[in-house]
Image (cartoon, rainbow, N blue to C red; front, side):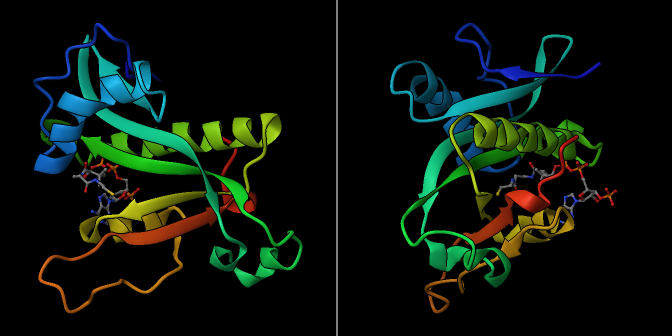
Length: 170
Ligand SMILES: CC(C)(COP(=O)(O)OP(=O)(O)OC[C@H]1O[C@@H](n2cnc3c(N)ncnc32)[C@H](O)[C@@H]1OP(=O)(O)O)[C@@H](O)C(=O)NCCC(=O)NCCS
């Protein structure tokens, strides 16, 4: 059974390997202090038999109305709007392709609805790595800004958005 729950200070994070060095480094070194000391983001972990097999880090953010699709844009005021940012998502190499990314995303969707009910939230936004863009599209995320610096050697993350009305409830 997979359990998805907030990261705990005593969790062993050092052995987690997703195959993405930057994501692994973030999880090993920064996820804990960001959550427990700085309060700038909360990480949810997917755990099986005490092993962490995946994580999703979220934080509150605000987006400008220009970022939103036309359909909901006209209903909203022209000032910064509250949203949930999926800052990082990774599944352990040994567990990829088994539905865990989808399960973590569902947990994030639930948080977006809770946030909407408690404090307001108009959308979930994510900075998608190029290799994960198609993954997010599967769940209805749309790109909302051209990839900047297309001439640069290193591909930039792509901003993607899922308006709250399209965020599944379960
Ligand atoms: C991208 C990632 C989070 C997906 O998690 P996962 O557990 O392997 O994916 P799941 O098994 O839940 O897949 C859910 C669906 O998405 C599809 N999918 C998974 N990864 C995909 C990808 N990179 N591109 C397109 N589709 C993808 C699956 O085929 C599956 O489709 P189905 O429901 O039709 O069968 C994971 O592969 C990972 O951690 N990759 C390395 C780090 C990374 O790129 N993170 C995202 C940073 S923005």
